[in-house]
Amino acid sequence: MKVNGKPYRTIWLKESDDRVVQVIDQLKLPHAFEIAELASVADICSAIRNMTVRGAGLIGASAGFGMYLASLEAPEHGVHEFMRQAATDLRATRPTAANLAWAVERMLRAIALGSTPADMRQRAKKEAVALADEDAEHCRRLGEHGLALIAAIAQRKPGQCVNILTHCNAGWLAFVDFGSATAPIYAAHDAGIPVHVWVDETRPRNQGASLTSWELGQHGVPHTLIADNVGGHLMQHGLVDMVITGADRVTRSGDVANKIGTYLKALAARDNGIPMLVALPSSTFDFTLADGIASIPIEERGAEEVRFVSGKVSHGGIEAVQICPDTTPARNWGFDVTPARLVTKLICERGICDANETAILALFPKEPE
Image (cartoon, rainbow, N blue to C red):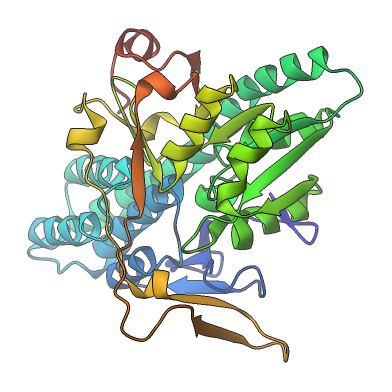
């Protein structure tokens, strides 16, 4: 996608030094656009953990490049032990997104085919680049599939905007390019279909306000920021035509783990007869799990994210402000699980299907490598 008219991905190897990974620093957005440089697997782990990079697909791509950097750091004797520890460290950074462990395992398989440390490093680099390229291509293709759903609604209300509500950031910033939930929106906008996006602020980290709003603005898509609890009101008054979210993990039965608050949007959508759509690349499926509520690990993050908000103040600086009494404790679950029964359709690079095991396995008779 483009930033100020210049094409960018969210992660790439530095052109002048392929031992360095460059990423868009999402902690600085929307007030500053900066590139961070990561030169070790420890740097990658830190960037994932502190959310310099975040989003299911980008976490997976970052893990892929992290394994490549680990291969550069590994001693000539003991490469396999070093890589196994790097894999363990990467997996431990964030537990909910399926893409992370999937990418690490894929990298381990590729590296294991190397006959020498130098061969392993070359295979690691090639696989990490391929993984990132595939993430971008899968998002592009799922955007094409999702476009058909938006176009169908547009045909039913000629001359009017298709109003789409989304939650958190499942845009190109959350992947390598295009995004998941935003990919159909960008495709529709580029095709000339009038769309408007209601952007949930997405407390407590405000990824909707800081990231989704920023990238929609960069692409010229009409949008309006709303408080998280406004969505149900808009649905009751006919101001939402569809809800599209991304996902961090989807079970083979169609249960969806996504940013906390997604479940409540799905309940409101069901009560108002509005399609609840979930967009994801195949790497987000976890075919080992059937019951999402019982089995998907839910990350609990630090209480300070709830107790403080960060933003630009009047003199232009960025500051954190406490919003509760000094002694008030807080809990901070990062994700919730929306049961498959509340999901209208799943959109992925292979097509559109119902959120149930039969339909999912029809699209994926063999698990993605």
